Image (cartoon, rainbow, N blue to C red; front, side):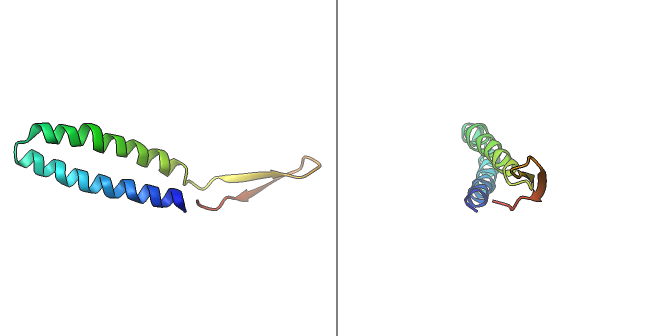
Length: 77
């Protein structure tokens, strides 16, 4: 659940940063646009990718005392 919330927060930051970068570009403010794209957007895109990779459903394999394995579907975080 916390990973999902963190992912949502990064996506919100990305949405706002993209809007601001567009406004800076329209205003001809290349420095602000570069700062937003280079530091904010790229960093948060990496974090979104990283967090999203941890929310993928992955089968969990459980072994009993005899070494017999059983696959169970993992719940989302």
